[in-house]
Image (cartoon, rainbow, N blue to C red):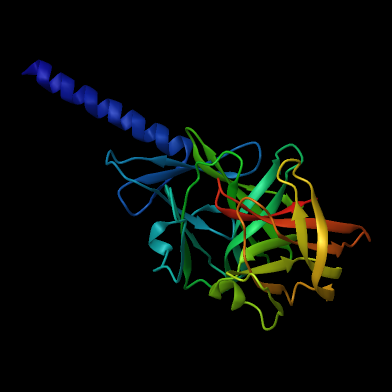
Length: 301
């Protein structure tokens, strides 16, 4: 009998030490499904969330994020999701974004070309666009965070009307973190869904002869002599050339994007854009679809 009591007391002491250690290393916040997330800080000044399993075999890890500080937030503060987005295949992480003040131009984005040393990356595709998110709404996303070269992220405008960018970085033992970066890509492309189109009052539009999908090109800075072009692409060399100019805009602005009904060929890019940037340099991009990651890209040529 004494051995049983001693063993029981030993288990109680071990559990107490484990709880104290967890509370010391991070703030434990319930995720609403019986699991919890431990928040830590690292040298990059990013918020890192570590998922603590409740022992159940969950298909998705769940995090609640306050957009105002990119920190874990109390799950009881989040409301029923007003906006939702789910990746078609392989979603393994669910994130509920909420805010305690109005957030404008919130975008869910794909991020490429990450340079951790310079803290730079390229916002390459817009997946979802919310013109304004307030404290009574939330945005739930289901994402596949397993890719090594393509990251998910968000951007939004802060109280000073400056656009902030973050990509979601996964850690084998520490969960996820949101890393702020300087966006090196001022022009992005996306499939033109109702959510994105609803955020603009007007567009430049073009009806392509090979139309099957609708795309939208959005810029953060004014682009002069913007052209939507037909291109010739050499599969063997990967080289592309402008074959024909299909549509011209004197100046493409952030307030009025370009929308085209077109067709995206997976293996051979057939359409592209050209423009003169803020440094008076002419830029050439082909529009292509990345089969591996299922995303649209503007690739310079």
